[in-house]
Image (cartoon, rainbow, N blue to C red):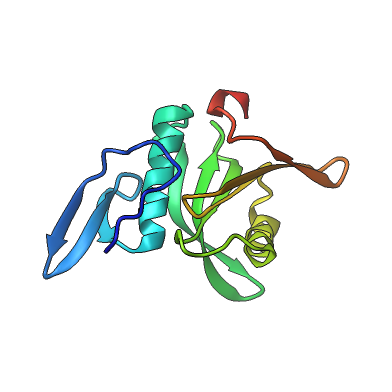
Length: 151
């Protein structure tokens, strides 16, 4: 797989090959998973959140299952607060996938289940973060991903 250069700090990721398949270690799931372009973005972004934004790996989960309208789906990453309440949802796309309204619609649908305060979308090159004000019923985009201590 072509490990694209991303718009993220370099991460010290563990890669291996097993039965001819490239794998990458997912520290949150504590196992090797197939190295796909989207997984490359996920692992680099999680590393960025933990190592540069002060997020606690113990409060993060990858590939979180949810059921919505009777359909089983998976949310890419959920960041919780110290009480286990979802605080941020992150949706990843491969670097060659454009971030469109459809991607935002997808993460908003997931948020009907989780009610997180922050939504983040990244393809590793472009990153978007918005904060939702449930009291006013609106949202606004932030200039950058906040530090965990500021959430």
